[in-house]
Amino acid sequence: MSSVVADIGSGTVRLGLAGQNAPTHVFSSDGYEAGAAKAVTRGSTFDWTAMEALWKHSFDEKFELESKECPVLLADCPTVKEKDRELMAELLFEKFETPAYFVASQPVLSLYSAGRTNGMVLDAGHEVTHIMAIHEGFAFPHTIGRLDLGGRDMTDNMADLLKERGMEEDGAGLFKTARHIKETHARFALDFPQEALAFRLKPQTAPKYTLPDGKSVDLISEHIRCTESLFQPVLAGCRGRGIADLAWDAIQLCDADRESGPMHALSQFILCVGGTTMIPGLEDRLKMEIDTRAGVQRDIYISQMKQPERHHAAFIGGSILAGLPSFVENNYVSKAEYTEDGAKAVHKRCC
Image 1 (spheres, rainbow, N blue to C red):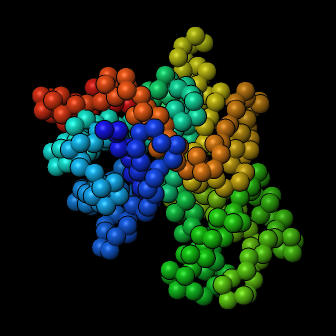
Image 2 (cartoon, rainbow, N blue to C red):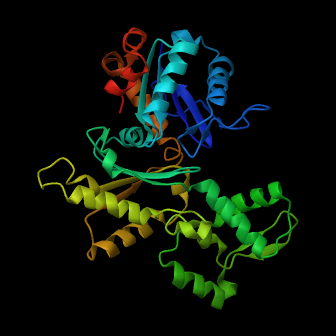
């Protein structure tokens, strides 16, 4: 039986079988059925009752497979706690009787999907953003940077900005409008203060958005202010350092390694994945911010995968690995190993 490959994020669940080029089932991780609770918040906070219900829904309703016949490969958040990795293994082995299990960090699998095992990954998703350095398919934990902000927060910020402009809609309607504006008009400004000022001085140059009632609104700077929060989290009321600072921290850690060391060249390639990275202008802004901090133009290539692969990168990487019989045989934790060593067996091989 082929492995079930699962990427369970804060906003979206992606499911499929090993060897597939894209997930066959993509659905919201909360509200996928009436009364369903949210299983994951901010990538690494779990509601285990909801998680059990989600797995049951996946096996019974989506795949219509017996879980005891299905090995599982799971993509998880790079900052998930060891105890939570153990609880996930316990849930799958004990409750669903899966015969074998492997778990890997989402950025590691995303890098595999790009045909690489070395580099840095910026993963900006629904509720959380990470950056980390990876060597030969294994993450360097001390390089991981985390920001508890993602696409959902940008949408909330856009909604707040629209309210400040006097837009009168109910909560759900305003959120839907804000999300659509973000998806169709938002971009990352190369020089945010200068561009925001230019739109205020010449509002006629700002893009227009037509509301559902036919009225139009000038987006004076909202379309660049909502995205700026990824670089300046305080604009969205979020504590933490922006992605340029987190990236620079990781780059300096790589630079500190000796010239022949495994980390030294990792910062020369940065892969951007996750739905939030689909917003135009990210790679140019990030490159400029890094060069500004370095004082010189760094030899860094910032890559973005094509859509929709960028949105499903972790699943695709997991599908590639799970489709290799030798990888499954040598790296999955078997039910026998779990029975002998307990849930801590997942830490032996999983990356």
